[in-house]
Image 1 (cartoon, rainbow, N blue to C red):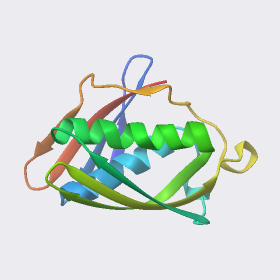
Image 2: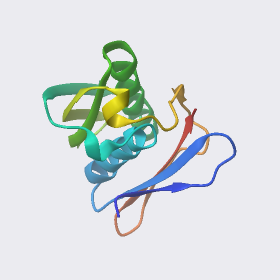
Image 3: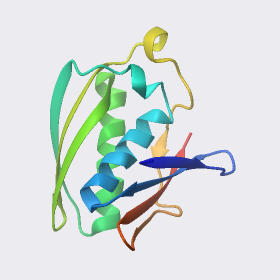
Image 4: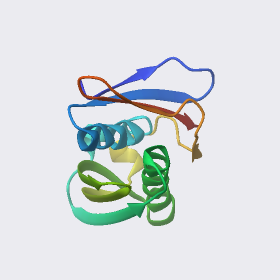
Length: 135
């Protein structure tokens, strides 16, 4: 399993896993969208590439997810396929999705913001990322 949701007060917390840091970031992106809608119904119709540079890995994760939220909020796009490349504190993500349609994708918990609260990237026989979303 690439990610799981964890009980957390009024917010949404997830833990994403990966054999590599890139795979863990990809699964974090999947969890981000799956927390909000039926990700299995998102088709690959629109391709997008984003680039993020940050001061450290935690900031890179925060900035990456914040960029996904920004694109979703400003352009109405949601994604279900991710290919992440990370070099140092630079990230490039090629992703594929479509315009959000509540009738097709449903609605779970709309995310208001990404938080640094409890955010972790752990490495031990792979990677484990913990994120709390403000909903």
